[in-house]
Image (cartoon, rainbow, N blue to C red; front, side):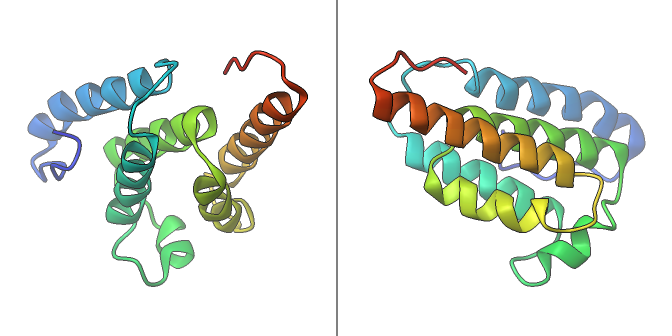
Length: 128
């Protein structure tokens, strides 16, 4: 379901978007995801899909097309902050460095990833 594109029809998009956001947010609450890299890559791909294809992502972030896409994008960025690895950090840094509506959320997500890794290095229990 997450890899499904948002329908162009407003009513259908309004029904599907909250479901996708809830699934994405739920992933951020799971403590031990068995294949975290696959989940992380799926979330990164969602952000890329919303903003066009892989080229020119920062240019397209400035033109997020609908409130439904914006909601999914926000959920994906927040969830990457909770479960992401160095791969997410690098990706989110690109978004954080742009002048977009998502830049601040991406900066917070990067900080969350860094705090989580710092706790792991210190041997402290990891919480989101």
